[in-house]
Image (cartoon, rainbow over all chains, first blue to last red; front, side):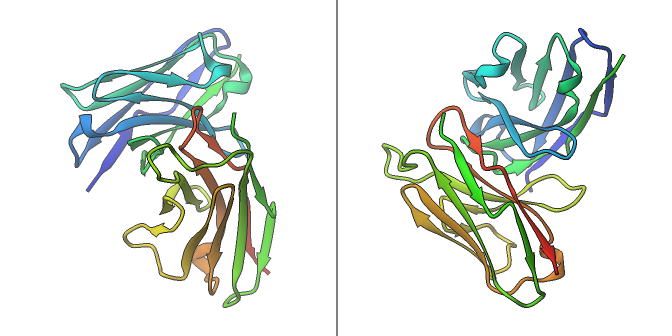
Amino acid sequence: QVQLVQSGAEVKKPGASVKVSCKASGYTFTSYGISWVRQAPGQGLEWMGWISAYNGNTNYAQKLQGRVTMTTDTSTSTAYMELRSLRSDDTAVYYCGAGRGLPDYWGQGTLVTVSS
Amino acid sequence: DVVMTQSPLSLPVTLGQPASISCRSSQSLVHSDGNTYLNWFQQRPGQSPRRLIYKVSNRDSGVPDRFSGSGSGTDFTLKISRVEAEDVGVYYCMQGTHWPLTFGGGTKVEIK
């Protein structure tokens, strides 16, 4: 069965960077892309971007352009999302999701807290 | 960007009664390949989202048949025929036809 296992919770100071990982199993990694979605406390879901695990093509949300980078490592079936210049409003649970476009399968989420 | 508008925001339902959630998009979700990429997700309290319905009306494996999706173009509906206690949570529609992908704001289903 498809499983996505994400890295653990992070606490960062404003201005720092965070890199969250998402290790996939149970399917051929290059068959799906990986979406990243975040959820601020008590809020709804926000799509951050998508990366093709097949060729590395990316599509990022406009509001995060320049601050976010999504990558994949096909040798370990792992996707990464790096967010730079963190602000307090980046505090959220970050999810990865595997799918051809829309996320069909979801990771367990990674809480990133940005606080001075 | 395609705006996804869900209603209602909150839906108190009596156990065993039906529930219906509307999702409207600001433009047609029919893709040039003929498919309509509209999914429904359930997020129970404290859990990750889980896909229930894909491409408007296809129920995922393991999803009870009391859940059904319908609609076309810009107007979509998720129905629960008889609400059970385990259905409490927030339901989101999401479109995958146009970049950037966008979510509806969510509908919170709770038991009266």
